[in-house]
Image (cartoon, rainbow, N blue to C red):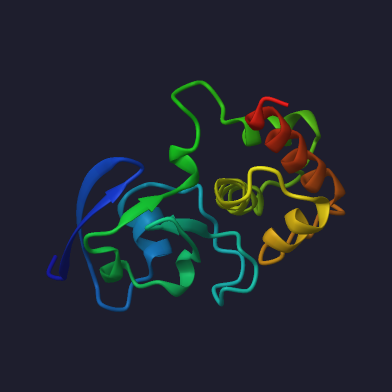
Length: 158
């Protein structure tokens, strides 16, 4: 296959891949690299299901070209847990039943991780604002917000 050669770091691992100029980062992650955690919910950047961190910046991977990953540091949901040990956010989502069908969950978790990296002690309003780019068709958001607040408290050692 001919294409654009890209060297990047994904979840701490050096990765190289070939992609076509029009392929999105989401397509590369899912179809070329087998990282299927990020989901395509809308393809237009409106739902947040495909959220990843690129150089510590929350982005919708459906709006980023795969070639733009060159030299970048990318974090996906697959890198959130430490082996078999779930990240506190992942545990709290389970404890608070903050998921149903699961399509939006990876995006919410990545967005929440980004939020807590910037604000370790958010208010409920700040959590709701920080997650506003993520849509869920199943839950009423309250369980998600409670899970994030509980994880924040645990991560602070409160």
